[in-house]
Length: 446
Image 1 (cartoon, rainbow, N blue to C red):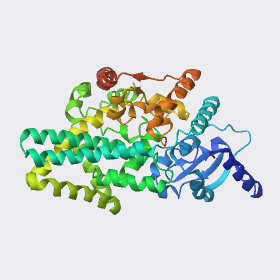
Image 2: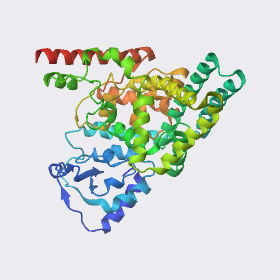
Image 3: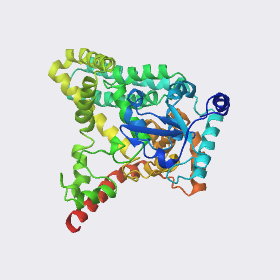
Image 4: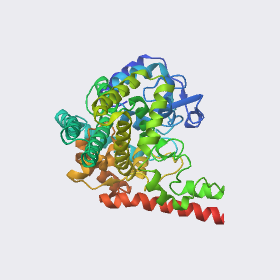
């Protein structure tokens, strides 16, 4: 299912096995319900209905591919294919009939074939191998900033200037820890998934007070179906914003007005960047750990809060430390929102279109120009296109695979967008205004 040698071993096993039943795409696509889920990987059909609840990435992300070919998503998300196949074998129920195409919903076989060849080239170039010193230095600079923050308060006292300066230092540390946990969460550092998972829990739990499992279940859905309504949780705005072109028109036609969406590009500054982490994410993370009884993640998160309050209560007291913590998260939230949304909100946001892996990721993502600052500031998510195509690739290799991706996009006439940083940030506001205007027009005239 991934590499040639593995396919040969699997082929010899299958020749000795009984003939599998064959199915048409029409039959496979009937099994796309929560209670009845089939998917296809390398023309083999798997019934994941009962097993999806045990899927490490969550039942939703794998369920989003029910009734579809999931080969490229499978290759993108899984690092150790031999290990994963052990779980897949009992789920195998058949294969596509000989006359059926390998792709569903009329997806381009040529784009798919060329993209898989590109992935093989990246593997041959060893672009999926991490430089461990790179990630060690990232961790070290986070810990150094934490130490500088404490020393600033210890040496200069708790005056306004030293407090605000320390808050900015710790917000930088938190933002960089956020990018680092993202690396480990995507299994892009160590060859062994176990080590990635352990360090991920340490960074997101002990250094940030959040939950690895919460992040995994949310973020992998975003990667599997980026900017797809009802599948990507990052575009589920809880009626606070309307996004893209389809949603605002639908809201307008139905006369839905939870907020004055024609002003969303203005109130975004008040309730978007300032509140996402200190209010919405913080509440959602704590509730998710408790409701799901995720005691391991909760213990890691408690270790963060314990360390923070032991460090700062002697200087600020209990209430002062709580205010200090939330001010740090208020600052970090601005950084996080602007960086993560500049690659997605201005792009196509729509219902499921059943595109091939390359086309779906390019339609939902764009890049920001490379520079040392942009790489550091965004955690290399200025290479959002390459990250979405190859989520397990270490981020320091994105710039190496980018020319290959550009060439493939040019060959197939797929738009590869790359912008200056300020242009990308301004496009968030412009996109919100455009969607708000579409809503107002539909609300008043349709």
